[in-house]
Image (cartoon, rainbow, N blue to C red; front, side, top):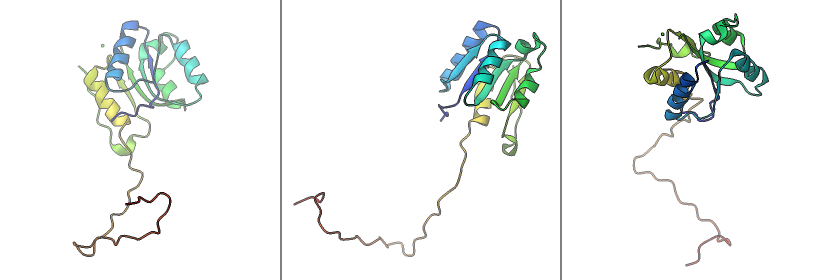
Length: 159
């Protein structure tokens, strides 16, 4: 089940690519998406963000036109947790061990397709187990806890 509170930023200078990626993510259950068509808008959104973006899906060429290494920009920017970057060229997301999934940054040779996007989202949006409650041991299979008898109150059912 997708984390519907994930904040996603899509950056591509081609409006059709933006639309395709947004529809792909919508189809997976992600709706908090901000699309941008130029690096200046991307930079403004990231700098003005009150909360970090969980994911940036971006075209590397968008930033290279203004002399910026988008991969480095994502690595050093605390407002971007994960990045799925691609160049303007069938794709495969590399296997990433669960211990290395703190901040996942992947560069692809072309726009991600649906299968690639689903694989990547499964990596960064996997549920985290914080702790587990111990299961109480049963001393006897037929044992059931004794029912407590409470005094009648105004909330008690009257026969």
